[in-house]
Image 1 (cartoon, rainbow, N blue to C red):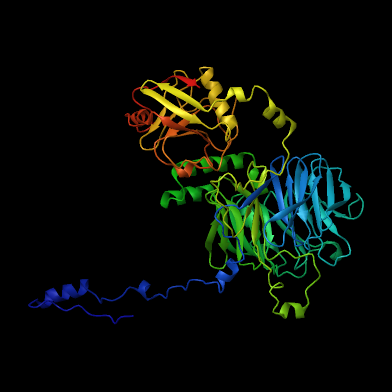
Image 2 (cartoon, rainbow, N blue to C red):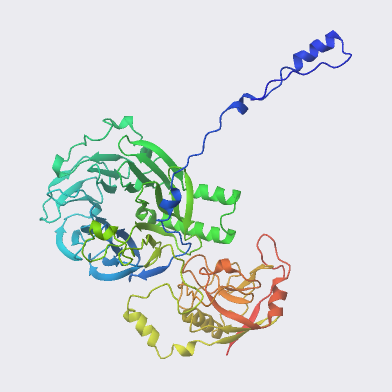
Length: 624
């Protein structure tokens, strides 16, 4: 700290003046705040080594499909991946020794919606509970169903509560409408071993085992967390934790915030407990003391403020993602969200509107975001780390110590597998970026399901090809625009455009939205931007193709209000707009009449509504 200095008196000043000056001008020096020692920024030693074993690709490498929307996904310690869709189907996949996964077996597990799934701590058993009031038990390693329990009530949450070495393979299941928890022997009959009548007062939101301390944590929708044990200790309150009364902990945090946990995860050493709440806040607790370590706010309000302070996404894309988030809350899609630890316990991963966040909980930093530019909203995820164990004999110490290159060829392939909102696919994020997504040969979305009877019939209808064409002329009040169409790459979109055009649907429609230097939009019969429907009535799905991108001006593309919401509105760009790729279906290009498009784009418009002051309309469209 610099030595304080005293101000000098002015020359020729009287004693009275100098007295008044000395009253005003005291000792001058650094302020007390400047003397404070700055807090050292926390550093995680060897962080780069840990991050080497976490996926880093910005885009997903592969995706595989179910017939219906995939709701649950889990990875086991035995290198299996299990996916479940809302129609009751379950698929087993095996992590291969080198890269990727391979399909193993397919089950129709439940006759209705699958409410909850669980995998045991050592990865040997898997369970699924559905609204057909049944729970199915699977042997993971032999991928076979070994038991079926008829519950007699609608199940809510289920979870394995036994630790490796326990005599009974105990599984817990809650009743959907109450706080009752039933404990069963997974290899036994339908009679419960134990029933918790009054542990919770309302429906449960999670049942999770900390296998290190052999303690089960259950949570309900009133925000209450309870610790208890399994059959070996007669379901009593655990003795190996460091609190007796819940008032000594921070476990009332959820009830205080009027929220409840929708996902719980434990670190590999069992000392940390990560939760994601219905209020979209991530809370990290010390498991033994119940004390709160960290809180990360992932609420929509926080994202909106962040976007205003420092733009994270283009405004149009941010608005689209916010609409998806509101829809996610409307249908209670957040109940399926979860959070996972990496194998070191220093990082947590969870899905947000920006992608999958990887957070270093030691330094409070977001170290990477996976899939930020993808058109998916990740909901549930699971992390595979290390290398898949080969099926050969176990390696001895001598084999490991030897200098044999064949034995050293074990490649670690960390992979995040995730589900997405309203998608019948699950996605793989690895350390490898996908191959060139613009070429048709390297399609990363694998079609591993046979088409349904309806899809086959629709594809083989005789009148199908006659309804579409590969070119059209849009006759406007400012001139003609010739367009080339792509019926092979996006048949449904081109069919919608051609049938509407032949029926005269677009006749008289005005260009209701024009943004200079961006695009011109039309196709709404109301002229407000809020109307229009497809030839089938309502909306239809997107048809993205890797060779059709918004990489050049004069691109013909569908307008929408989010994923799979195409109607009749379309637009023509006047500049390259790559941020619209995989969000709007490209179905044509302007081949002649570019100057007409430019003239329309340059007309004077209302700055608030982007609507031209003078109407420009379509006379009709000729389909060739």
